[in-house]
Image (cartoon, rainbow, N blue to C red):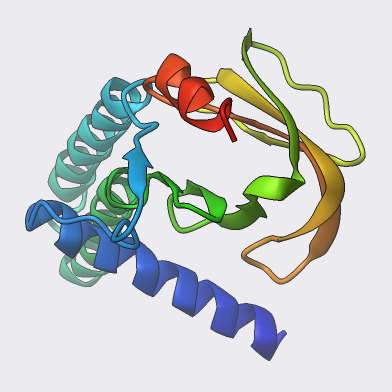
Length: 189
């Protein structure tokens, strides 16, 4: 229980660090490699969710204006929720996929950070998928319910979830804003 709480606290810290980097227009972990973004398909959805959270914050504040203690507690929680939603998107923006000379670093915000050695990639193809049924050995990193690049690996790699679970994956499906560019960059290797 304490281990899970610690992991959640670190995850939350990474989200808010992503927010700071996003405001500073910086990226994390892209030095020495070529970055491939994947957030273009989720920006409008996250902005809409943040807007709905702001509207909810205002509505709850108006409804609880005569109950100062409840008003203050829920205002803090609502502001935290708005920052959390913005932080989720910011973490994805500042942590793109990164291709180096030795590996492809596949990421999804603060949730996923998977290093795939280039010699472990058997095949790469541009393949748009809108449905993703859970399957053993497959990691789907969909953005807007869509993946656009599929990697088949020669040997399974370990994927650790942010709560500490681990599983072996031999197929990775991910989204890239420029899937053709990512496939071209990986093909000669």
